[in-house]
Length: 594
Image (cartoon, rainbow, N blue to C red; front, side, top):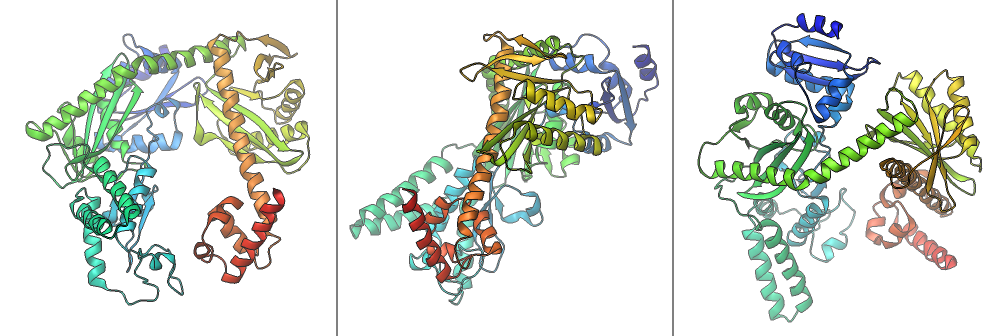
């Protein structure tokens, strides 16, 4: 503590970033400050609760970087978090991404649903959203494609396809393009996607009337369902903001060591979607909310034309960081909608507090109980392994990672084993060597514990590999009972069996980890098996070489999807004769299976 006090006395009264480190020299938190001396010192004064107390208890050292302004500190903080991925900053991360609809900018445009907007940000005026989920976005695209005969294919065909014959495309591949008509269609589509459904609604109603007069009741019913969809999704929430601008509204509420941030997406004067995030409070609530808003637009969310925030936030500072209009309305409808966002944040946090807090306590307690049982100094990162094969074929292994008791999905890894044979020990030897040789070679973060889903034999093999690599990482195994449920831990050297109370938090914690690694590995195994099966079948069809096979595998994934595809769709990859030959072969193959 004397060391920390000396360093604190040297801190300057200037803006900058600070990097907190644990006893292993690992950066566990990155923050920014307007005044480094005041902010960093606050961690070591007074009492802290919740995650802040846990963070402070692990700090044994810190570094800092002085910059010229708070804005520079903010930008540097974001870059440092990306570089070091500190575990306490992960708690504040929002992995939510939204689908958008793109009206593709081409001579003859088409509609598509995209998630990766980063490659689309240049000239993104033709991106619309965000949408609540990908189903809503695809339903909207299908609706517009049904009403407007835009181009459907990515590449022009040599002759009109099925969409032309059912009047959902004007046959742009072979017919002369009517650019005036095309321009009018685009204007109406853009108007709809910006929140005004009146023209599309009128078109559907007129077509419904025609169908009814012609006694085409099934078609009229389809149109009625489209009309219902528009009414449900686009007119369900009216707000009193008379603006065609794209506006995002933020509100926040803090309570009992947690912070909830609520965002409304307003398009065409209507709330088209909302999203809330509950996170542990590690900073002052207004500072953490500002950081959340600034980072919110990093992944999968486009900046709107204006952002509305409560008066307790620094609108001018956010405006400088985001380089768009940010305001704290003082009166009128905009102030009302900000107040609504605050109230929704309060309701969401208070309604979910017990669940969030209980889950947090259960996980923390279980992780701490495991640490004590295994006599470890710390237990932040756990890596678990599971193997899967089918009679010695499609031999794979999966690794999942839990950080502070929670799955870190971006750290998961798949291993395709080099030898296809039923050899659990050989598989374990290969996967442990490959993983931890890579950890040494690339200086990756080492786990505090490795769990293998197997018995004493697998543990011995894994320990031999780690000994050969001079890596002193503890390894435990999970022993199962006759019902294939976890019954005890295998740990220590020599190996001892540690009984687990099946009513304890630790039991559920271990089961959750075991289920996670098992499901992850099985999913990978099934994917490989499916690809291997379809690949071997396609190899038997004349006219399908490696290039065409890869295209089919990429697009359709399995035999079932190929057989459901239309001939026109398959002809985008294969010649007509090869398509007919393939479908005949697959039909015979399916009959033989029965």
